[in-house]
Image (cartoon, rainbow, N blue to C red):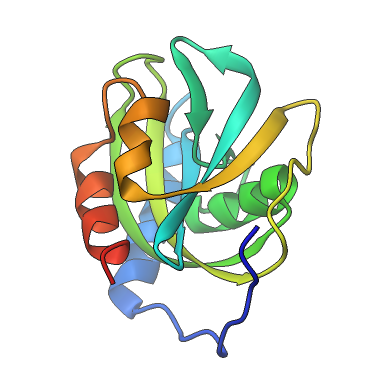
Length: 160
């Protein structure tokens, strides 16, 4: 695992906060809450988890889960990162949303910065393994590739 050292978090922009709050309001208007995914890039890698029970053809994914009542996508992404992978993150910005082509679920992707913690399968009932993977390793783990806005974000974030 990679060592974790970070400076003090910077405040998210007002635009990012407003966009993330919009998803909280949208979630109240639907019967099924959206799934918030934490896209955590750190030290040239991104955190993926292997699900104990794959959904469709997906074994590996970002830490993710349903928004709870009154919770924003940013709050849900941070909570899921802690619950599933044992890491504390700072939500930075909304990357986009879509209906997942394999699962049919409404997904909201949130770019997050790692603040602390050593990634591990924090919820063994849900997660069997965690991995910090390089950009070139993603296609072997995620069939069909990533959502275009997430891929664009990682192309930039993992090159630095």
